[in-house]
Length: 506
Image (tube, rainbow, N blue to C red; front, side, top):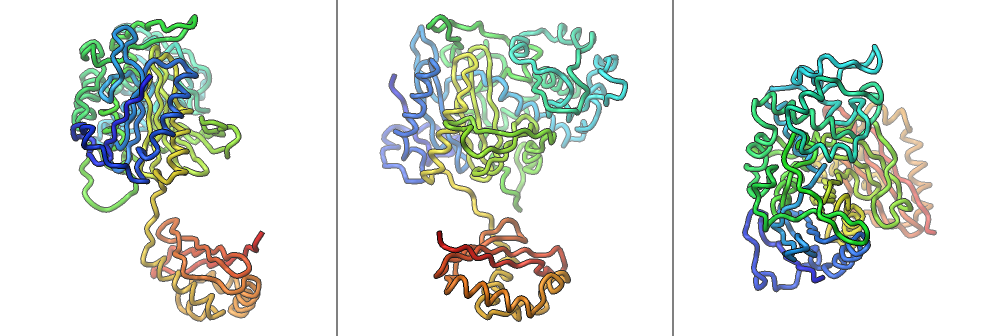
């Protein structure tokens, strides 16, 4: 099969696709397209291994769809190739839209996250909880998969077509619990289906109406939506499962009561607009805040339920790489990774479709892949491409700005090192500083450390970890100095800690 690559690096995500002539210039070294052949190899290898009919992969960077690659067909009978405008069901990646809808309603004062869910879904009021001391399920519990429901993949996927009347009867009859609410995380599509009912009851309109008019339309996601039968057939990726060494078409599921947990259909062109909006919330900053929700609200999606677990990357050799921590936020898995820092990720598994997305807030980027094979989550391929682009410098961590106070105290630290005394800090230290080490001992420690290190190059910039702390590294004749500057929460700002740690050469 022949890959098609479209390079959109110079265009805003709402602009029309460029012609081949417009993309003929060699890509810059920081452009993902510069590594097209290596990305090609990763995606082709994964697709062949997993029997994928069609796939689209994208990188969102600098507020736009910077790179998109398509492979295979959206329909094995008509042999229509996948394009950036091909529509795929994204399954559980829909949950991010449901969670954002809940947060938008919260911002509008129409609910609170710690409200009991039965305030908005009256059918829940007669439920029998598993213990007499069980707390009532809250909106937050549903968002973070901590309501006490059992994991319901793949049962939940097949409920997409459930009529609203049947869902009402299900809720009225009561739901069996696997444990008391708020005890631990357990992934439950049912909880997000209930959130869809919360949104519908508050807005007095179908769940899909709120998402399509309040989220999709303002972002220009005009091709996407929940009524898949209304979408042009020649634009839709047909869903297949792989069995008996052949592809078999999955039945297309219509929009129903469980749509809020996994029913959305998008194109790569549209989905990139959503991811650009999510990424744009970082970092916190001054300036206009006129998006469809406030930037601070978007950042709240990473606030998990604190039911953390050990995380291994879904990548080649993932179990051999450094482990991280995982929790469930609001429509996103929130990962703490040793290299990427905070990562927002989610997979989408569905009859006929598999997808994965990872957002790297500290890198200002996102990567995603959509496929048309049942439960073929392309997480490994996405993470492998992320590792490639990071190693090549096409994805780079954004640098924390150095505040004026931190810069000033770093200059003082350089003077302290040069002079061998802390005279330059006179009148600028917090009350703990002279208690932690006397002036005489500072002179002694500085002399001893300088004797170990030899001459040092002290011009290297400080790397901020926030407005009031930072680290620095100096190359020295006999090794290196690793230092820290930590300011105190006082007015005026003072220095609470300064460290010069010597590391010898190996």
